[in-house]
Image (cartoon, rainbow, N blue to C red; front, top):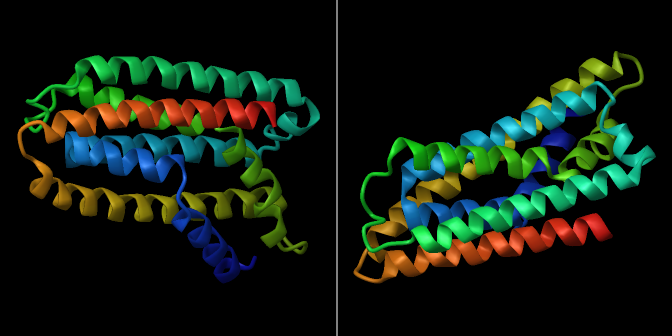
Length: 202
């Protein structure tokens, strides 16, 4: 296995702005580090499930049956629209306070579902990861290991974003600003929903 080459490729991909990066930064700015960490945990779990499914070859179904991937994309879009609606109406001036457990759980679920229903993440494991697999070993084991490596790298990048955004949040925590940030988060969720629909129709 080409660990170094794969790690470098994953790092480049993770440093490219995308839905996860934008959402996690906006979430941390609007709701703080605790919300961001919960979301990162959900994202990591969603990516891990994708990696396991890919190592088992199940994500090949997305290639064999494109309609399946299309409906998964639509389901992801509907979910993000629902959360965007709730985030818009839940935004308040007191968002700088400690989040209740139910809110933290919601961010975890969004992060998990966002990546579990992300067809392009599954296709990444299916198409990119095998390029770094050695023909001399078990492809199943190697794909699984590289999948976990990609999850670790993605999680580290996400944690850096969370702590950076949480630090910046202290300077932005002024009357009116936190509410605007929270509502910007809901708009961003709508953008992610649009990204899901675009991916499903592509």
